[in-house]
Image (tube, rainbow, N blue to C red):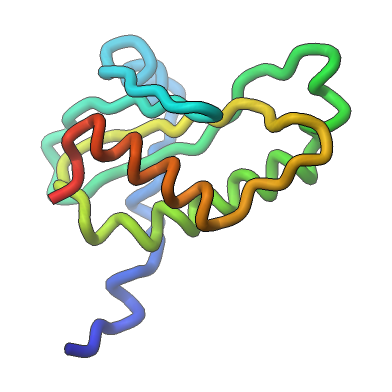
Length: 128
């Protein structure tokens, strides 16, 4: 069976935006944690999921490693891991993935981020 490329796109309406919506997910959403990340989940009553990728504030010793380049790389890996996993998830949820700073000179690979996300989605009961 051939799956079209559009099924795997990370569409504009799948981005969780707006301060009020993001604060609601942080405030009322259920939390699921694993090493290096935390997932916040709340139902949204839409036929699709929306997600936001954000980062915890780094301590002074982590700031060197957690610069804009590192944050952008972590965001790209998170988006790609989510894009590859999203077709296996139940729809109708708002999600926030909070990523914690990595140790200096360590690089997370796509496979690591994907395992991390799958672990969080399993804990949250979102995988079909």
